[in-house]
Image 1: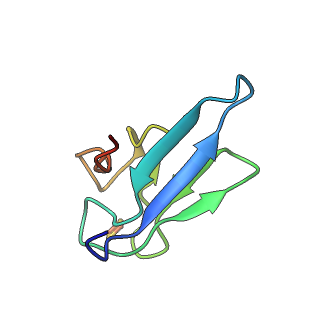
Image 2 (image 1 turned 90 degrees about the horizontal axis):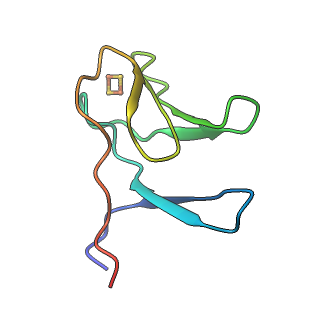
Length: 69
Ligand code: FES
């Protein structure tokens, strides 16, 4: 591990979805929102789906996907 934080979401089919929890906007740590099944950033309100795609800005880039072998 290189010290980066990873978030994991397991969907109803048992598939694991891993994302970096470092917000692609300015680097705050996103938090899992269980009600919405999204990664929410507390700093400026960006939201990402469980695959890290942007739901709401200001972020324009998806969350990084950690390397998994
Ligand atoms: S750092 Fe996440 S929205 Fe700005």
